[in-house]
Image: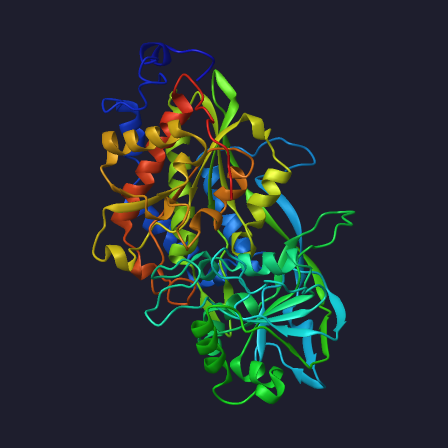
Length: 531
């Protein structure tokens, strides 16, 4: 479809700013109905099969998945973009550094502590070799109005030792807020690290409440290599201080003469009684050495582009990440829901839009379908795209991101008619209205905004690829059905996927995309992104 056509003229009023959807839009319904559960199932049974080896970023399984997706685009007659020196066929390639976590050692008073046995960490800091003569126990490492572990203390250059979580009174009320339930100091781990950084501490050691259980939950991150984007000629250094989670066994040794059974519980009781920190200097000479092996690998985002007609310079981007965790201890993590479900939803929508265009009903704005890699390693594929955009970011009208839409969480057990929406109102009140109207007109799902709450402790808004677009003031919607018992486990398999539910959610995304791509006016950004 070229610059103008009869259909656009006839229904221009439908796509006006005030009218964001139309129940009688027969073309939207026609092409939306080509999205079928049977086709979603066909694609997912392939992408989440053992032959794709868990699709780990930069590894053979991820390459196989990229090849499968690009062949689907080709079968829909979506041709590769011609962008010399930017794209390689359907691929936007990027380089990463693979950094082993095993080059970290902690030595205190001559005792060497072992990675994973005694401590684990998430490597957001640079390699270092640091001798620190001063170690300070600092309660819970909190600085707040009602409770302050840092009061009248200079911790510059010191290793800080602090409990996880926060202090409570005898009734279980937080000493930070005076209310039941955890505060932001328990829900957002960054606060303690950031506060220690501001105070110019050398490092932060968090005494884990249940080290073995927590390590089991995070082993797939802590025990696997860190991957970060390669930025050529980058001389910047990380400003993050090293932060380690340590076992109670290790903490008792660090407490020296106090290090006997019951020390931690006694200190916690004293803090509860006094309602302030029990900080004290510890007689420890501490060495932190981090020297990790690095190798370079490559990965790729896959781009399927459908050019618009009269508003083709404006681009809607639809994303899902197609990477997962790979193979861990000889177990394949197939990632059927995370995020095979979002990937195959994207494939089906690309086919629907391509079919519409082939029949003379293509979108007015351009639509970029972009399965992303590296999400599981820190949103790397989306970070690379927004840093090296194929289309100017100022021309990108919105990002619709799909990540885990194939299961039900415990809050919705047995419910196949809901979806969590996150972020729609963060930057554009208009986008939120369009989304809700499309659901009313076309799909009638129960829209759950629980995780859209800025105070939500899960912080899902910051945990998938849409956030890199939001950081650049591009309006986003994140479609999600919640975390379940098989999240990031080898048991996230295709046989547990609800494909009828997936079909309905995929259609909601499609109808929202159709509306955004065809309405007369571009949606307005009327809010500012704030973390």
